[in-house]
Image 1 (spheres, rainbow, N blue to C red):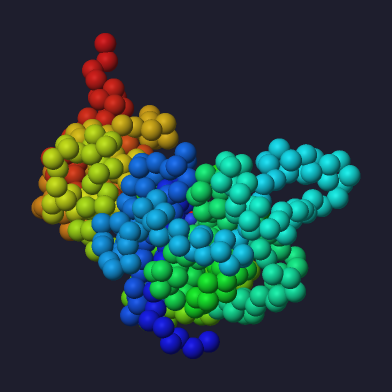
Image 2: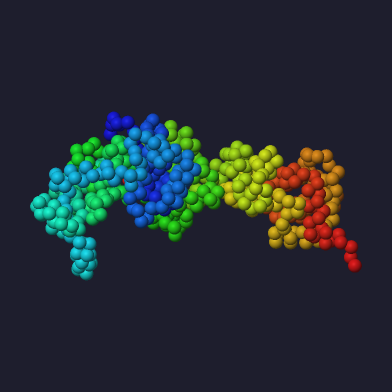
Length: 491
Ligand code: GLU
């Protein structure tokens, strides 16, 4: 396939819901194709379904795309020479093609009512046969048809599918995909209210916007021959195609709410790192080679090719997504990581709403950077580092209740007090205390950790002590509940 035309690709969402994973991936592949070929990426809003459209959906689609960094060159809020970019504002541009279709006869009026068709469908169901549309108005004379139309009789315009025509779609991913027009019905191109249907306007818009490559989900492959027939009827240049594979859940079935979140917005609010999600979306069908999982957008653009997109369904592997999240978090520079987790710390009331990602906070959160996969996990993990005393979970409480803990903690506190600050080697200090008390390291470390952090897991204690500072570390060792209880005078 030669690439003679300038690359112009489009993402064409209908604003009837949030941007879902599949849509985001389609948008990403279009974007990557444009950006890797010096082309233009358009965003066209297919908002002709007035009942299901909403401004909220539109905004969430735009927000999600911006969040992913998929900037568009033409579209809403980015005017170009091929607008309007909202289909609802393009209706007048379809009139000429409709009139021409009627005039030339490749569109014809069909007066079969919805009820009549339903009766036929029902009969076919009862007879357990496949219903096929009966094109009984195909040969009605144009004069009669126009007279009935003028008299107000309800009708649709159907596309007169030519007989015996082979339609071969040259698909960059699937190769040549052949359809026979004999398997196609005369489809509805214009509804009774005069509004053209998706397949008709899609072809008209793609042509008017000089789209060179239509990159979209495999579920649209069945629509492509219909659109090709529109190009042929109007003598327009056909775009090239790339139908990207379906996204499947881990159960091998089409991805659905049943198996997890399908809206990109859910991943955004749950604190998935954008680079990880971007990387993951790429992997839903695309690969750089057979071993590289992690790559940046720059690396993607250097090698992006439609031919590297696979034909077979792409499995949405949640474990892999989480692995990528952790990997990307570890790659982040601490200031950006801190800025990314700050909203979650504010939400959890761990820092004040006007807190900033300053050096102190950076030093605190950096200790957890290795340990989390989602930004939203940070508050739970790091809660113990905020405030004077932590909350003690059950395991910590148990560790603190063991016999002799109080004297261990007091001894460690004393050693901390006596050491220079910042402490050079916290575990060496603890080791010395353990030796003095004649106890194993474990026996000492466990309650010390419980007292300092309120849990038995978490980062290196040396980091904990450094972040807490001398005063707070000592306070925690001396004032944790068991230490207080044990040291309370008996009476
Ligand atoms: N509005 C259609 C959709 O959201 C666009 C399909 C296409 O890309 O042609 O599925």
